[in-house]
Image 1 (cartoon, protein in one colour):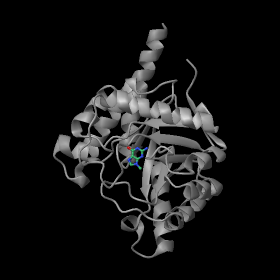
Image 2 (cartoon, rainbow, N blue to C red):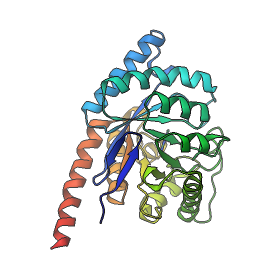
Image 3 (cartoon, rainbow, N blue to C red):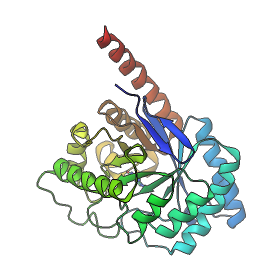
Image 4 (tube, helix red, strand yellow):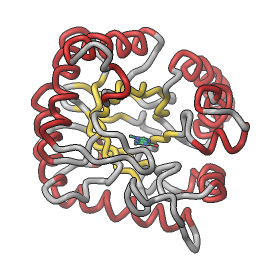
Length: 285
Ligand code: 9MG
């Protein structure tokens, strides 16, 4: 079987073992205590700590995608993410991802050195597909039912796995038609985005049914409400549950795990890789 690779601009990511994407929010509630310059410095410091802990990708988000979150303008999003991308590009070889749906931000981030566009709207905003195709970046296409303001009000599916898969197949096809080659595509079922606890658990159990054409899977479960519902823990007490779900996702085929608690997640995924690596070798004879 060929080693799965992801082309991210001028870099290539080896996905033969599951890797971690560290979460870096640069919204005003994250690093803004001392103004913009200090916020950038603090964000870069946090990103470098995650790289030291083993993150292969840093996912920078300038607009919250939490349920009920207010939108921000493209200019404001660019003001938040660009200084961090530019600085990180100078000091680390890690892949820089930008969590955005806006064509202006896709273009600005790619020009500043981002290698991956992580879009929770799967490039459905006007102009986003064209902007991503023109950039040399990889693209993560995520499934979401509804939009962040209303998505958790009454999510509904006949078969959540089939519907998520059909949506991602269609978006991947649109990307290829627009000129984004398969070696630049990643798909993501979008845990918590327009899904009940039962929908999320069903997706996790049947994760292996989601990909078509061997596209790699990215999964984000870290610190989400699903963890709190399962463990009873508040937002600050979700590390163990998040790591357990990351391990289950990796065992069910996820190649990239989006996580806040990078050191713990990297350790857990190393154990998965060791066991699955030996299983693969053993099955070869
Ligand atoms: C930005 N963001 C928040 N949660 C996410 C998830 O589960 N997947 C991806 N790709 N992005 C996410």
